[in-house]
Length: 159
Image (cartoon, rainbow, N blue to C red; front, side, top):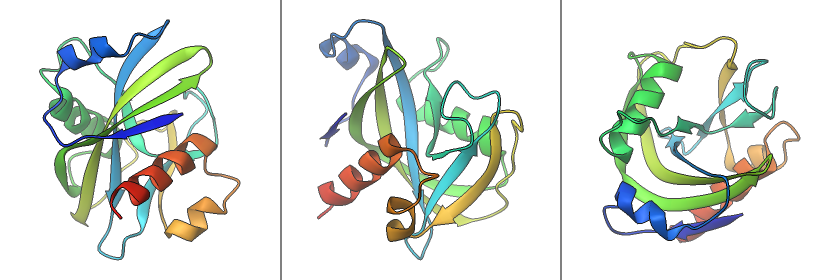
């Protein structure tokens, strides 16, 4: 697992720099509320992997996504509905993780939860949403190790 903090507008062309076999590109949003609690989703029975465990909101880049920011906005609507008011930053990092022989390259965004209802739009892929305090998620056996690594990396890059 690797996390790279970025401070520029990353493009899809930039992904050619990551020369891994069986590479897939995705997007993740790290969402915090006003109390700095972190929103995670519990993965459902139809999820690709890590069923029953908590992870950040995100997913794969699709061919008709014009850029990474539009991809994460699409993913949020697909997974959380349209009623949650979340302010999205520009990309804050790039995260590489290998899961089931797939080299995932994720573009990471920061989201600030303002208000509104977070809905479960894909009940087979998501069982629930929950806000965790930082220490609580680090000590939970229900949060994936890759999610803990990413959240620690984001926290450390901001200090």
